[in-house]
Image (cartoon, rainbow, N blue to C red):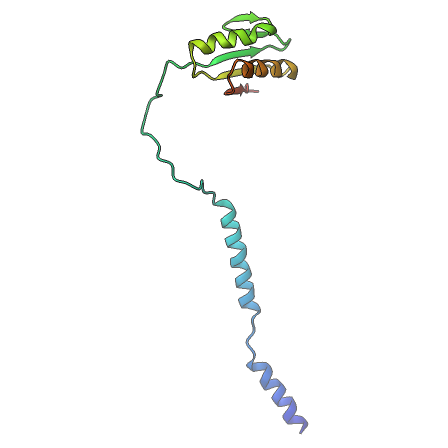
Length: 136
């Protein structure tokens, strides 16, 4: 009787399907798809781009403002008083309404000077400005 029970227990153990390798494969596939999905970035919509090879309006020039290391503000190769920055930006913007203000600040200049120029640009009605970074 004992032999029959032991033999039946061994027979039942052989009949079971081992799911461990299948689960390993499923988890590896899950990790692969998660990793692939994290690298795929979609814009969300398709945009029709124009086939223009040259700029639409080459006469548009940027308004360049430089801030030196001792916080001097330069525009059009002239030293500008900080209180006159807004008036100069308005004058240049009237000449070229689609121009962007490009601020070139020395890395030793103070943030206060940079903020003053940015505020003068906003007060002149130009919200489109860029900060130019120099090479090290």
